[in-house]
Amino acid sequence: SRTTMTATTMNPDLQRERSTATFSTERITNLLDGGADRTHRRRQLEAVIARDPSCVFSNDDNYYLHRTDRHVRSLAKHVRLVELCRKLGIGDECDGDIIASNDFPLLLNAIADDLPTSLHWVMFVPNIKSLCDEEQQKKWLPLCRDWRMVGCYAQTELGHGSNVRALETTATFVPESKGGMKGGSWIINSPTLTSYKFWPGTLGRTANHAMVIANLIDGKGINRGVHNFLVPLRSMKDHSFLPGVTTGDIGPKIGYQVMDNGFAAFDNVRVPRRNMAMRFAAVDEQGVYTKKNRSDAAAKVTYITMMQVRAYICNEASKNLALACTISIRYSAVRRQGFAEDGKKELQILDYKQQQHRLFPRLAASYCFFFSGRKLLATLKDVESRLISGKPVTKAEVTDLHASSSGLKSYTTTVAADGMEDCRKACGGHGFLQSSGLPELVTTYLQSPTVEGDNHMLPQQVVKVLLKLVEAVQGGEDISDYKPCDSYGLVPSLSSILHGGAKESYNCVSSDQVMNLPAVLKAFCHRASRLLVECASQLQQSVSKGKSVQEAWNLCLVQMARTSRAYSQYLLLRDFVDGVKEESANGVMKAPEAAVLRDLARLLALYWMEGEMGDFMEDGFVTAEQSRWIRR
Image (cartoon, rainbow, N blue to C red; front, side, top):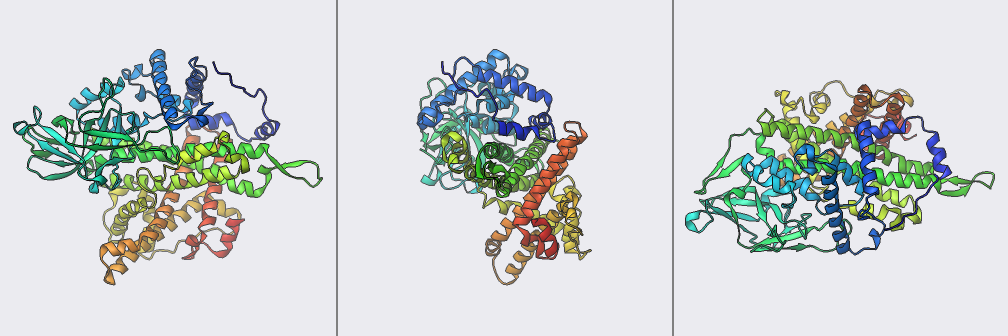
């Protein structure tokens, strides 16, 4: 067995810093865990992993292993995790479905290493649950539960990713009468090099099935657009390749070495007709395509999985940034540099203002992202539940959720990636050591700004949705459908700007008042609204000058990025403030914890305002004097 040296005493500098806290760290921990019971349960499960006699969960030599060995080691961790869950009865409350248990995320965090099977529960199984009909779920979900079917989500191709309409993979229907399987079948093909599936996680070595996104060609030869198809890749008996499937690992990456991101090419791969996800559309044995009764909102259900993943990514931005902040702030408390005025005592680098200015806003952002990520996941779960059960969901709700998830994914991952790297740099030379934990943390996270929509492209999707609200407000249309939406908060400012109402301003007459949270939120709301109206105006002016709609759109992309960033900051701060208020009301936190979190909200808001002060001052909303108060 492996022995690990563990410190038995706490560094006195850390001990002193913690002793001066004005709030209960246990209550903050309960907040992050989801309650005191969840904290207790987390600690129980962490102990199970830490004390496991197999030692397979040890990460001691991770940095010395080749990526292939890391992959094998992580698969061993997955197998042992399943064994422990079965032994402890975890998942019994879900008919043996481990990944549906509330304990499963706690165990994953306790392992403190990535698992190459993760796309199975993050995307593959949710796809089956949301897009497949009841009969298909009864057939496939038990196989997923028993880990006989291990899946991935194969959307991205070498030539296209989130632009799903441009995907090239085809699924062509062949009836039984023309050589198809009994009841008809699909022929899955990769017609071009650029149509090869490329980048899906779990695809390279681990998965034996893939949820393949392909163009459906029906029995009449009509392309019905992209649909989902369950395609076997490898044998469930011996993991050997199935006929017509070519797949493998895409090779070393800058980070995330445990994950086997892969490629796949399909050459006349035959699958049964019923391997098409058929909750919202179907093809009969003659190849006749039909859409099932559904609302305009349900037409967007194919995007639910993508939005789910973006929501998870926002949530993970909080966790990863928090990890980096924890390492760098603790380091800053124990590292000393420079002497005090007496020339004898060395100073903690945490006491230097530039180190605080560097790290504390990152810490504040990690808490901010926690509240928004949690809210986004809850909202998405509610909308998905209503869509699947047939309860009313307006098109405005779905598109607004798409805008929020796109904007927040883009902004939170950018801030987290940049912030984590700055945390690494804040540790000086020690941050360059793998043993600090920061290099792998940073490089593994670097996939997040690109995966599920490149961060520089997503703002277009945000603005495209919000421009419809501008049009509705400007035209005096009924906007009642927007009331449950995130964007409804912009309506008062949009109305004031578009209809010449009372000019909005930052109503602060002293330096103390610039930290008033309602006033700060109003400032961010006004800024987002103004930039959005400017987007609409710029597009109209470009078209009026003879530009095509596409040319006008291209010319506006930089302004759209600014607008999406402003809107995301508004949503994040609003969720932060609302989340603290909600948790205070339900008793999870008391006054000291609420006070320190509100201070973090103020710090983050003013930090963001300072960094982009021009946006707030352009139309006179913030004065020069107020900008000086903010900076100080």
